[in-house]
Length: 213
Image (cartoon, rainbow, N blue to C red; front, side):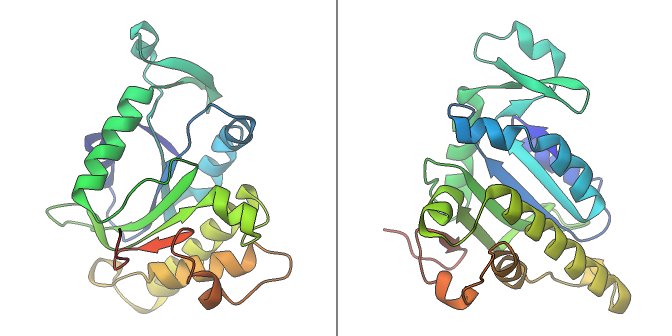
């Protein structure tokens, strides 16, 4: 779990990753009780995701100098440091990403899952990304809770990466993002519905080949 104010910060960190892994952009604005509950999970997610899954909290920073910047507001103490949030940098990141890929932010808590690209010119690979609207998933009963979904996502990410480590060089392989998400959705419900039915809801589940508009 990492604080990420800018796209460049994510790229810089991912350039240091040598093996293929799942990358998660977490878009959650700290303006509701639901968001407060999610932010309280950040430290647990940090330790739980470890080396198989990099999770970036968009618009956040753990830079102590940010307390002197007017558009950053302290949110909480996470992993031993004060974390700050800026709506300005959140919007700038969101707008930049919307121009880069065929994706539009839902306005609510959203998880965008992609994979890294070790040793590539761009260390992030958006060719098979999947975006999940968490609030819609909760309303429709696709997932029972954010916590269960993230636990299942991280577990699924770990199993996919571990399986590939046993059979191939990860730097020459690809991770199936869709399979990872489908498994996470199924496992984050008490009584799973077939994931292939759930993913037909294009407001909840949007991927790289989804046509917007």
